[in-house]
Length: 258
Image (tube, rainbow, N blue to C red; front, side, top):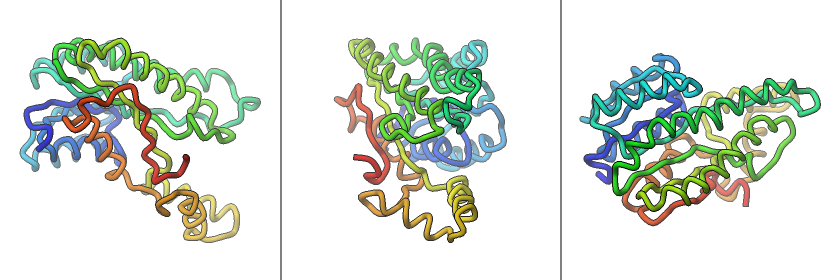
């Protein structure tokens, strides 16, 4: 129970990483506020957290809205007594077009979510984080900031900006006890990724297994990690085991990019 007595806020609660992060924190003893634009997955996650004996607080909100973020922060303060852990997991995955073929408003939308939205939620929660002598701010980033691929520019650029501000906040907030780190996953194996790999197989006239094996062979470990394994690194960063870790960008990808 590494996080007994702690309260965390996790944004971007969906069927993948956000869900597994929230459950991973709860298994280690944390109460968890869940933030998402819809309640579709959030209610199921809240029930699962309560089954673990922890308190769950589902909160609908859009991280690009200053008012929504302020409302979330106030609800966490009022109903859970404040939080010392914030995991920024909400994201937009970009327009999947080349820069030449893109309308820049599409890039702005991605930046509004991944960069400005993340900062808006962070700003709203910052008074609670700095009120503790040992708090954690964790940014879910991507290996796309380091391994550039065509048509990922909107996504990778927004996350690149987030990687820089992660280090900035680590520098500025360390004196107040806030540890700030980023995790950079690659492929997170999930039904969404399975569908994506099947689409590649259909397009190329091959099989799903051949596509999976080709991509998995690019990693050191030979497989694409599921969301629960990626979430484990986030739980570690939230825990006392990472007390002296700050300003870091940790690749969580089975050694996909070195």
